[in-house]
Image (cartoon, rainbow, N blue to C red; front, side, top):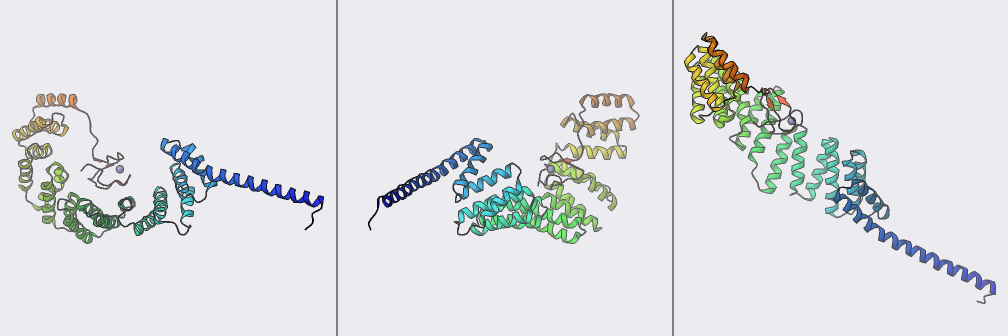
Length: 382
Ligand SMILES: [Zn+2]
């Protein structure tokens, strides 16, 4: 080929242009692939330091540079969730699930974040689905099992919580008898409130197979028998409840007093309180209950002795002091009654009545093992 002068000029213009373009492009590419990891590292550092704003900016820039950085997407979504932007968080994490051929570790990480998005949004079924996907890939994941249990408990799905806890325990080779018994009992109690008393009782008895000392199961079995009109059995189970833990025996005092009264076994309740005191001599509740019976019977000396003994254990005890006052008034000893009123006013700090959730402060009139407000389990200190 024979180039004219003009031809050479055209050739060189193209050649130099192409070289320059190639040079610029390579530099840009180098810069591009160089910036991604650095931005990502800065994002991670900001996350560790708790600077969510910088973390957000860096992670966003990271995925603009490198759309293959799965972890940057995950963390960006997590940040959005923390800021309460649940829809955006869920969308980012959900988009990642559409990517094919990711290694299992990435899939698990994505489903973990997605599960947390759904938990935060209160989407029980979606959260369950994500957690089950994790368990398909990693059947030993204690985290996924625990979250599954928590999700079900919050949703009041106690049977499901029971199953999830049990299969988690089987994998980890542990024996969570107390938790299983409690969940089974709560499932039964739910049936009882739906009018299925007989089924409920079977649940309670199964609960006791998991933990023979499960207090709520014993209490509710007694209640179920009472509702069926089987008062003898009710009294037997309430008594078991009291014997299993004298400290919380006071929960069944009223039930047992009424039960023995309706059965016409008037001495039964006194013997019951005496047995509690044999097992736990400092049981102020039982002493006060005995004193109350003495006041009702008009046995002034015995009432005073029992109230004084309760006050020896617990000098600020209002019911014991009130029992003394009542007994002195009944005995027409108003001078001594007024001495006791002064003593009560000095020591009085009034306690709220009922059972208080240690998690949220919610008060229930009846002993409870599931908080209807904050959905905590076993938070009433019973
Ligand atoms: Zn609560």
